Amino acid sequence: MQSRRSCQTLIAIGSLLAALAVAAGAFGAHMLKPILDPPMLAVFETAARYQMYHALGIIAVGLAGQGFGCPQMVRAGWCFAAGILLFCGSLYGVSLLGIRWLGAVTPIGGLAFILGWSLLGWYVWREKMSTQD
Image (cartoon, rainbow, N blue to C red):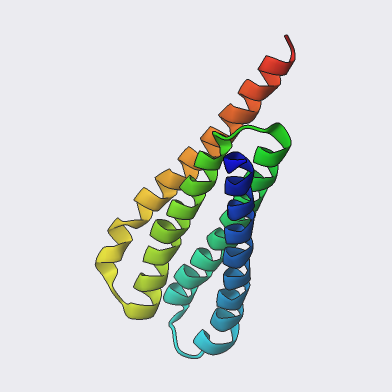
């Protein structure tokens, strides 16, 4: 029961983060274009793009967790959420607020993304191998 609830929570969080990524993309394209210089606009657009990719990843993890019945998959989703907070959040801060030192946080978020994708692949592979017996 807890595993199912965790998967549903991830699907809900992923959906919300995807909606916010669309809003951020529209905000960047329509409101920030005349305000930000091209390099900082590109930084903002990278944040919005990676937020969308990983919001969809969170949804996929929630669905896969339900389908495979693998509660460990939830860890991959939380890695994606942490990556969005650290990677995308730091890029939003750099581009919108000019807080350059936040750029040092960005690679930590990237590592969270890599860990999330690696965990997802590992759990699916392990589940596939265990069902072949």
